[in-house]
Length: 207
Image 1 (cartoon, rainbow, N blue to C red):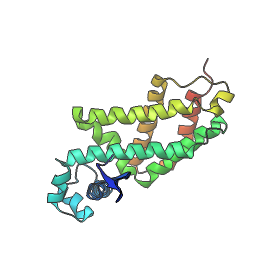
Image 2 (cartoon, rainbow, N blue to C red; image 1 turned 90 degrees about the vertical axis):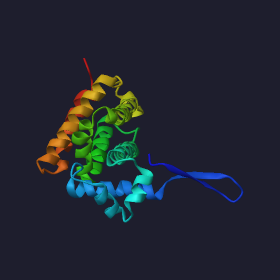
Image 3 (cartoon, one colour; image 1 turned 180 degrees about the vertical axis):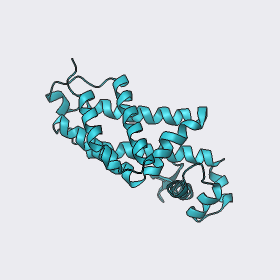
Image 4 (tube, rainbow, N blue to C red; image 1 turned 180 degrees about the horizontal axis):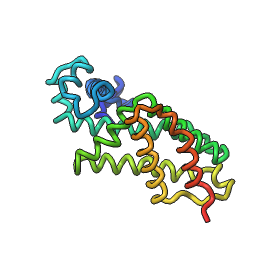
């Protein structure tokens, strides 16, 4: 998450930690530039132009465009996870939970497909420096799916919890399906039904 600033009341009680507003503006500036030009073509000049600030401010927050990019994607994947989690009714029938989760995923991606494409395609190209962000995102979403499969709706159907390897397989297929749709200029919503079907097949009864 963006670096936080501790907010303290006059009596000294800490209320909350709020992201540094300049850092958030720079992350938003990069996101806007990615949506406009893609990550490879985006420059620090583009970021500060969209953020309405200066290169001096940028380098006061980030050492490089790459560092800003890694933080942007870390924040983005957390927001995606939070959106899916809040959209799913854990008491609902397991089929309905899967649809709710996939619809939340598709809805989030539709809003900023270029960000997701950069996460899928450009992030791995950064090599070892990107590995922690990749692993953290995969762990976050895998854990979300595994927890979902242990919800009351799934337990009522007497379904076995999803294993970590199957979660990785499901997420890998969904990620590639998403990338192909965005690269081909097709509506992201077109992956909804195939993604629901694949999720039901993996999360459903296993013999």
